[in-house]
Length: 120
Image 1: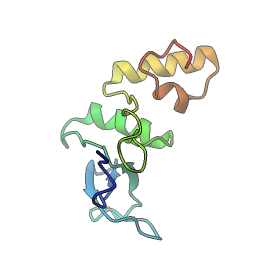
Image 2: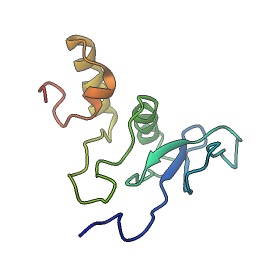
Image 3: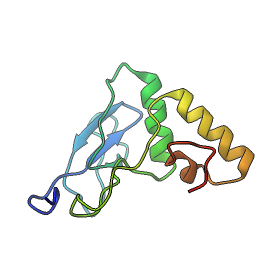
């Protein structure tokens, strides 16, 4: 069954600075944070925002979003493939940064691997 074909789902937009996330329809000029008026980053349809007081989880979210990745791994209809891996803890992020530095692979590519030392 196609998850995204039946209904139009709004993607999540996150402001890492204020540690908030909202669902918004995609707009031509992007979206601004209602708290700080900075541009919000599109986090994808399958993003689950951590609690606002969980600063370590938000640092991981900031690293993933600043690397250009989003929290969705499915095709446009939602049934094509499984979700992609994204790190959830600082230890997972640190291991992927070390692996990227040692192997010379871009960080965005290593952040999407369940095991940072294996090649796809």
